Length: 298
Image (cartoon, rainbow, N blue to C red; front, top):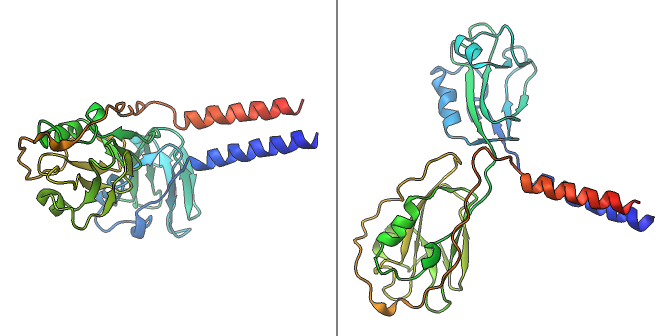
């Protein structure tokens, strides 16, 4: 019985770890501005929200002085009219936290005096959680000297949306190619002298852990100038539509046959649709582990 109990405890600990790994983010409303009457009106909180990505399970933290302000969650109509008569919920003690437990639009106002009409109001759009995606660079082409020049990898990136947390897999033959993450200037000049990072063994996995432009080249021989280079733009918003990769001054040239062999990896993973339930895999695995644990008790 003691052994079965230990197994159950272990299973529960695993479930807890899996649940904890589904990271919810706490957004401090307004950052340094906090929750107050902004000097430039409601645009202050509009601009703040525009720079954030809100996912199911995230938390909004409204920091304010109790008695000077409050925060009410309201409907869109009440938000537009600054009407606090029948709020969905109302918190008067600061700081106040609201968990974003449904996708879609959420509206918040301060009900004190004319604070709402003066701009102390916030609207956010919550997306379903997005699974991290691993993109295989070039798909079946892999990471090699492309016969069509640099436009090959430009076209590959053009119809994809890269989000912080995704990763790139560069499939290449060790010794024939490598992959270096470089600055834009080094990318344009095909200069591999001082790379940000350098991977020499294939396949190489690179995490996209920051938003903005990312540049990659092969430093072997003239492979970069022959088109073995990739520029992508990484966003923080999972609802961003695929767009054009960062511009470069590269003019495609005809490569020589010295690019080395290419491999035929599988294509990139297709991300789930925005309406899919978050953490589905975690929930399913958690249920399975709990079922096993329960069975061991009998």
